[in-house]
Length: 218
Image (cartoon, rainbow, N blue to C red; front, side, top):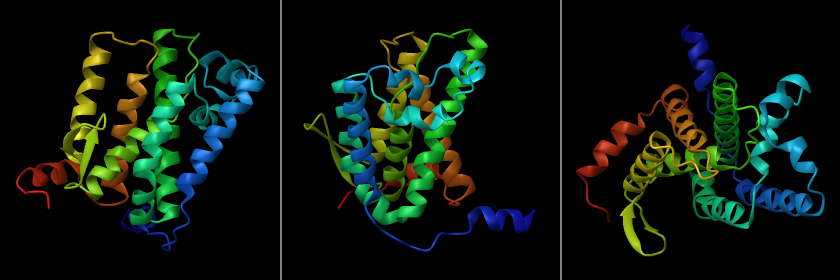
């Protein structure tokens, strides 16, 4: 068991190549490709029926590159642009990519199981938000005293921002404020990001958040 734990926690050699910008480029490329050929969305978005009956087993990965409209991709790519490069430089590119894709894929699979359990067979899950919410969590863990400006106006610590986002997602999901937004997938991204830190990086995000309350930003 100890050997297994060491294997899971073995760090990658540090390497930084700004892959987060490449991810942004890929997302934009897929968006414009789907704008030209809308039928491609069916093959890339995650749908319970197509996953099980048509064996679209690649869609828990590819759904992360599909977006439903300009506002959807703009919000996600801005988040990736503002938080991705700094986080990738801190974690290293290999760790960053593993974290982003693993949390995104697990968020997709979790959502898929919920859709199947609730009979939501017509849903097409799309968007990078699961992985992006995990990135927001990681950024707050590594830079808990950094300030961000919510909506470009309200200054707040990154830990406060993530806590606020989590509260909004829980409220929206509990009170049925769907509006085409996959709140469950966003929360799954935060949850799997939390597990990643606990299991692989041996850091408790909750402890970091609590500790940041007693320290002043400088």
